[in-house]
Image (cartoon, rainbow, N blue to C red; front, side, top):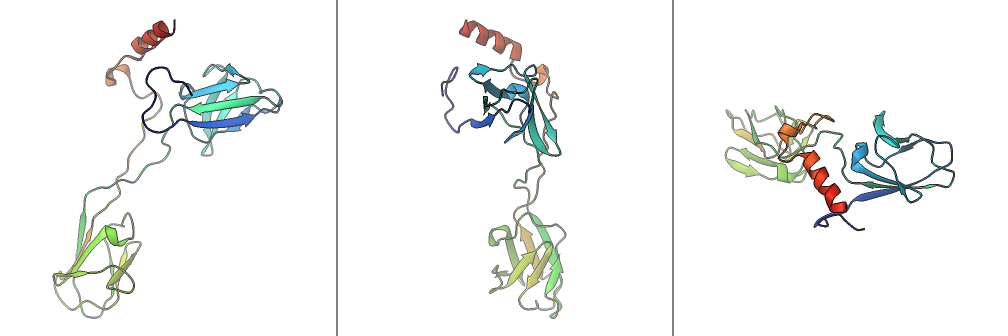
Length: 200
């Protein structure tokens, strides 16, 4: 694929191919993207965003809708120049510490924060200042917000310490049309003018 300007140094643009049937105007997309973030070519002819087609979500499914149904056997090539993030994403956050009192009989304790992941890499656990090894064949396991020890910790005040190394940090998406020129480091119109001059 040829590029205007410098070619991307990492990654590729996703591409999807559809087949027209002469009647259908709406098709499922592999990813959600605004119309201007798609390069849509119908039988070799580039389609104009927001005029020849639009995009939207229907019950969580991204769709492209054409103003006229592609011809029967028509080939639609869609290149995704940019995808929208539709769901919140988990990311590494601050550590979290729980302390419990052992009583020499209880083996299960409820954590005050549900772990982001249940794996040995996510916890550091001490009983009476002695490190405990994760796993059902070792000292403890975690399921949801419950930590279960293979044997009851001895009695003591705050003698059980559970440190979660990863948490859940919600990353919110930006609504369409929510970013103004004042928030950008460049003027899209100036860039569009420069591109038009470069292309002649």
